[in-house]
Length: 337
Ligand SMILES: [Mn+2]
Image (tube, rainbow, N blue to C red; front, side):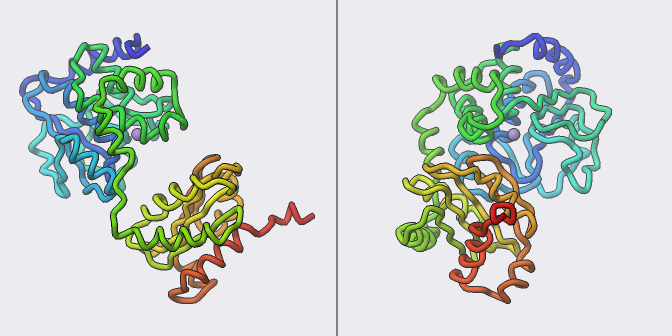
């Protein structure tokens, strides 16, 4: 399944683009995640004998600690360049994104696009392979490597597997049969210990006090614990705490909110007694900001101004929690009828 006619047809066209004089830059969009980093690395392996040189470039640093750890442990060969000397390169490739994502647009035209997001815009690409059905770009690149018999070493296999896992929430979200096949191929080749370390993730120790406060909320009871922080150094804390709390039994869902960079982030997770938190977030929070997600996981971003209008400047954690709880637990008009 990983060696498909589609990929087989694409390979000669991709290979035909490059010559030994080429200096290729492989770009990723925004703060690169494990899927884009591993896909970029796989593309580099695919083309490295065809071109004079190939460099993987990120225009932004990695902020998320888990992803920093991933890039460091797997020694992903990439550089961060805020200002790229575009003239140094003769060809440009983009993985796990499309040119329209960049605002403003980059002053270059891409020769190669490989992505799994829904198609956006029409460009005169020399080569594009966009497969929105796929759960990860890592899966598409694995097909290229296997179809053209490029060796996939342990480190690259681990990177691709982790990229696939993170983009599909461990194969539960937006998965195609090809993603499952890719996992079946990659898993036995992986450094399982390293994968395990990455999956456990490193929660910065500085976050511990937030956990203490959150645990007290859960202990206080209730089927739907809500906890908010009026000042957070990183919105990631909401994710870590919501993931952790959702593992307790006898709860329907958990919501963790916090204000960081002028946004109140709200992260919701389904718990053992089950509730569609995507639906809840959209129904209750979209009038305050943007909200979205699916059954098990959802997220909302509410401008700080909206919160301040309701609660005044610098609300306490308790006031913020009461406000969010009131919104989330309020009955909708429909159910009151
Ligand atoms: Mn992706």
